[in-house]
Structure formats: structure tokens, C-alpha cells
Length: 260
Image 1: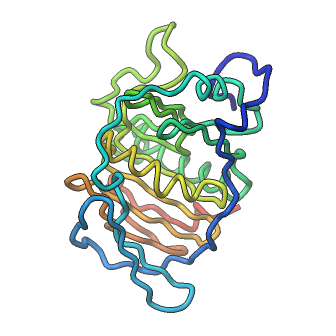
Image 2 (image 1 turned 180 degrees about the horizontal axis):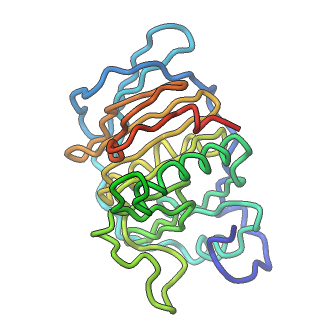
């Protein structure tokens, strides 16, 4: 799926590109997490180890410590590399740097498709649920003064914030309104930017809820933005039946997310 538009005639300048997937830290399996912990100061993270290979993660950095809001624009070379990115890669500009990631592998694509299907009927279409949401798979979103350009796996806007999801005939392909909810499906290639850089951008733009889905570990972590900090309010694993904010109006059967 091309998120940039136009024909790609050249490859990106390697000096402007950060290729995801190298130097990846070993994966952890997340375990059950205590809810509603007290937020840490901005920029701090807390990790609580319970046993080898088991990691509890309570809060994540919302921005670099003491970092002022940047008003810089993306460099022309980065914008050109973004437009020239190959079709087989997902191109994103985060904090002025171009990141190229492969399209989701089968486990990630299957989990994203299943989760989206479970949410669209009750929350977008109002079938078996309250409706009131616009839910889009892999939207390209441009936010901030640079702007940052990114493609979450799924994003949702409350209908009152986006009453017209289609827009006029000349509306751009990308969205320039911060979503109310974002879901990132973690992979080896995207885990670092999903859990660090994107979380800072989402906090800056006031995204209220972020979900991290890990189809290999079969975990779902629910984050809420609270006074500028990311608070991990729920962590679920395996085949639980859950009520997860901001979609707690219905029961979500996680076994369906991991099904193939």
C-alpha cells in the first residue's frame, strides 16, 4: 500500500535513511502487570523484573527529558527520500529522520486484520455496539511543525472529532488530525520506534490511548496519557476475555486476535 502517492523513480539516500531491524534487543515476554501505577517524571521509564525472561513495564517516556518543542522543518533531502522510498517498504519521518520498515509479516498482518474487524462492527458501524468512532487501518498521519509522518497499524478518531472521515474530493490522502486511539502491532523491525519515538510524538499530540499488540507473545498492553505521562493501565495475555479502554463497552475475545 503506497502512503506517499506518485511514482518512485529513485532510491533513498542512505545518509538520510534509518533502516529498521538492525541492532534489535532480545524480545521479552510480558507478564501480568499491576494497574494504575503512579506516573514517573517525564522521560523516565520503570522496569520491574520478576523472573528471567519475564518483564513488567509500567511507564514509558513521553518526551526526551528537558527537550524543548522543536519548530524545525524536515530537511528537503529527507522529504525527497520519503517520496522516493521503495514500494515494498513503509516510510515514516520521525523527529526529522526517515525510517524504512518492511510491510507487516504474516503474524502482524493477521493480528491487525482480526483486531480491526472486531472493533469496526461495534464502534464504527454501530452493529452490536455504540458506534461513534472512525477506525482506519494503516492511515498515513502528518502531525507537528516538521511534520512527523507516520503510519500506525490502526488508528481511531471519535466521531465528534472527525464528523467527515472522507472529506472533499481534493482532500489529501493523509490525515492531519491527531487520533484519539492508536494501535501498534509490534515486530522485530518496528518495536523500538513504536515503543519510544512514536510514543513521544503521540504524547506531544495528545493521543489519549495507545495499544501495543504483540502477536508472538500474545500480549496486549493498554496505555493512557495522563498529565503528559504514559500510564500502563492494563496488560493482558493469551486468550483472556477483556474490556479494554477506550472500547470497554464490549467484551473483546483475545483468542480471536491470535487466531489464524
